[in-house]
Length: 326
Image (tube, rainbow, N blue to C red; front, top):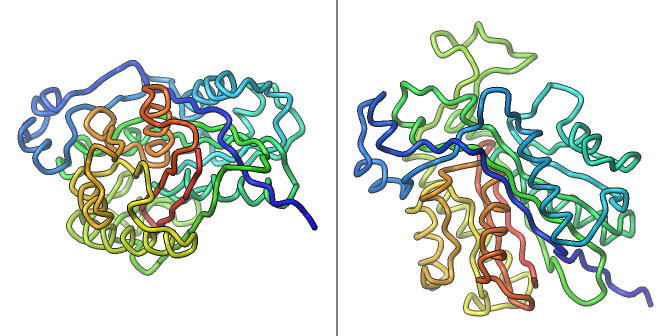
């Protein structure tokens, strides 16, 4: 009988750009205030990449820290999967660029674009590789420079987003690790949260909003996100024969504090058991879940043996979850 294999998180890492932009800073350039932003989103500040600092730069630094935490050399990697919606180039993939900088030559490396669900999607792909025996050691990264496509004159979106990266190293393990992952998408809702520009589409169809800019219908996104995350949480618990009270930590996508609180309420989980970084990071898209995970691990909140529920929702729409015995 073949022994079951799990993908265990051997190490975590993260990286944030040095520059911090507070709500008060934003109030000087658009009609808003710290009180207005914090009351509606829970965000107080966000990090912004410096000129010339790329998604790949952030990903590289997060990856180095994750490898160090795991005690793994880059040459040992069998796979690199990077979730991002703000790649350095159209091609090659940012994962390939990071692979080269790490010196992990030869292993497969590719990007996954699922917007804010990118890290959960990438984690799922790496988990399948390890479960199948195609890889024993994998690097999974979520990295974004979302502020590069923020319209700083649009207060409905400019206040929300930040830049950052997080990473995990997965190793094959016979005893513990990722128990299950669940992914979904609904492309019919694309125009509620999207960037209407691409290589094939071009700019002309969407004037006067041409340019790489985030367009979002906030109230609609909120409603769909709460419903979708509630559904995927129930799906995850049912798939593993667990009760919601079995979860030690909820580590959600850091988009909006109200969405996080709504998900926690449905789980009957006190906020003391929810990892929240949105106040300091804003919405870093695919970087948010691994950033929050790394902070929780390094602060000592998350301990070995605990049960973690990761979940995310993003443009596409995409959404997903991962249940992990850390």
